[in-house]
Image (tube, rainbow, N blue to C red; front, side):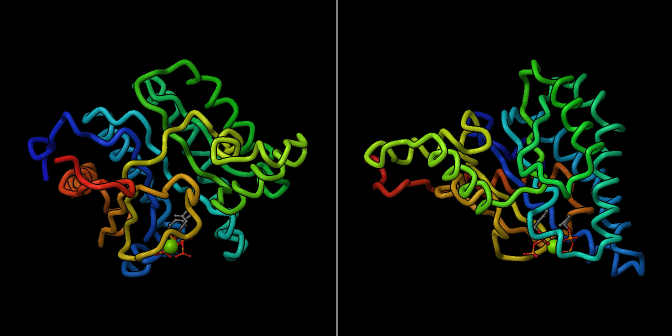
Amino acid sequence: MSLADIDRSRVPVHIACVMDGNGRWANIRGLPRTEGHAAGEAALLDAVEGALEIGVKWLTMFAFSTENWRRPVDEVRYLMNFNEGLLLRRRDELHEKGVRIRFSGRRDWRVPKRVIRRMDESAALTASNKRMTLTMAFNYGGRAEIVDAVKSIVADRVPIDKVDERTIRSRLYYPDMPDPDLVIRTSGEYRISNFLLWELAYSELVFMDVLWPDFRRSHLYEAVAEYQRRERRFGGVRQQ
Ligand code: IPE
Ligand code: IPE
Ligand code: MG
């Protein structure tokens, strides 16, 4: 799949990816699972490049879920260090490309302080970039995000008749982020795994067989081409 196959006038504004399959990628090579996460870095960077090339304005990547704490401690520790290192290695080049980096998820005691510090530094460094917003969903859970929104509504004693969909949206982690037009999940699993539950109500879902470390911008283009073949209705009927 190449750039030429994409209708540049109908590129999704927001693409969200569930970067899945790192462990299996490593397994079939007889490597520890952590090698799969390491190999996923190149895939992430190529996906960012591809998204920039076609003019995607928002890209959201699922890097660590609120359920991933269930993994062996060594793998969790590796993922914390890996994500910290990834920021150190890549934030300058992302900054030069005009990417604004953000983090979405819970900042609870389990996330090491130094990882939080790197996140804050990277977000501050890139805060005024306009070309694309790259949101890393880290210690993110869709249900947790909705719970946090409800807590903030209750804490502010919002009257019950003032609570509507807009109220909830305004208390999500990033109310300015448009809903994803396209959600891509790699590794051949057909599930959402607690990603962006509120936001993906009307997203087009594309499931791909590729394992995340093998993902390249050509796969992104393939998913965008599939998206462009879909008809979005939002509950209505097609305009004649
Ligand atoms: C996705 O790959 C990365 C994270 C969840 C952090 P996995 O580690 O889930 O890989 P598989 O699904 O076991 O192959
Ligand atoms: C989703 O993948 C989370 C991330 C990609 C960070 P998982 O591998 O954790 O999801 P399940 O366990 O297969 O549903
Ligand atoms: Mg997985």
